[in-house]
Image (cartoon, rainbow, N blue to C red; front, side, top):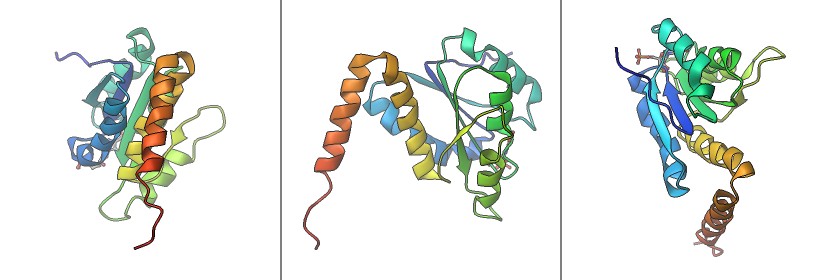
Length: 163
Ligand SMILES: Nc1c(C(=O)O)ncn1[C@@H]1O[C@H](COP(=O)(O)O)[C@@H](O)[C@H]1O
């Protein structure tokens, strides 16, 4: 059986079809030199894989989990229910409800199990990568410095003049 990959940040998604959205999380992680791994894990289609992933991630070196799913998006919440690690949820835009269903599925967690829900789609995935790096920077001064410089570069790239 194939092994689930684990890294400092592990990005999981409900389906391969989520990858075009979820790959946006890779950019900030790469730019900030944060190691990450990716895997398809589905609460609905691969429940055993979900349990194995969620119950062992904290023992395998993962510090932050990013979980993206669309539609009936139970993946982030179910992972959060089984891990002590912070889980960042990304609502992937769905075919029929443009992601409102994904957003509500992920954001409306019951009290006692927390998911840090991001915006729907590509921007949410990008910010999930950024948020994961910010969480890790709490205990990594060099990463915090890289984040400060990354922010400065971002500000410099916003033109002052209106064209
Ligand atoms: N929401 C979930 C879960 C889950 O929450 O466990 N597993 C798959 N899915 C979602 O189903 C959508 C359609 O998947 P397919 O494109 O494979 O049919 C995807 O956005 C996926 O995240």
